[in-house]
Image 1: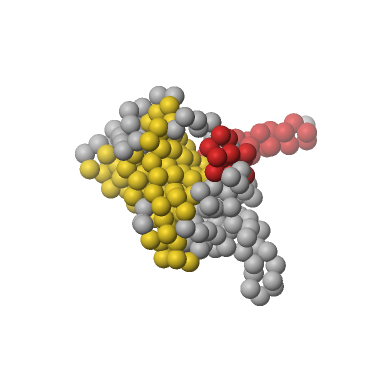
Image 2: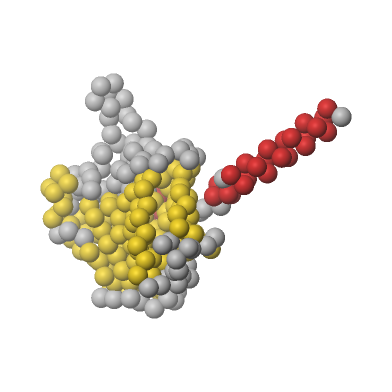
Length: 104
Length: 149
């Protein structure tokens, strides 16, 4: 896993409220390094997928216009205690990351 | 013998790798053309959106005034039946298409995230549901642009 991330899942009944923060620079390619004067190359997460018990529930395509250290909040239905949530992302350099968590 | 053993080890390593990183095997699509478009109308076309219907069943929460364009919180929830996809556009960003969300069975047509806005502009949320495209828009005033960030 390339970068760490944080995930928090709160279940109420059969709805799991999932919030996550991924540590990623999300460079637009428009920013100049103030020391070297060089353009910082674009570096951003392109895709993210969420799986519930191995079943794909959410597919996200992102651009450079998503803020640095992306935050994402979504909701899964039909959730029970002990269910698995998997998150997987890939950026434009082909770097990947993600996490696995259990619903409580 | 040597070759066989090497092949065997290679196979075992590949299998172990696949077991350690199952998430890497999932191929995810990314609509390069739509994300590269520089005019809002073109990005709409590139995601396949046409004949937009304005809808008050799309709940769009975004600040009217965003002091810092590099972090603009946005929350979207669609009450349109059979919502499959949601697209977010910031009309005046260098590339207007900001994000696309595809909702499968078992997930609410809801998300919250944070986006960058280069300047004050309308933000459009386009929902694909039952083969039709719906839209909700808000004007966002940006005090300090955040596209360099």
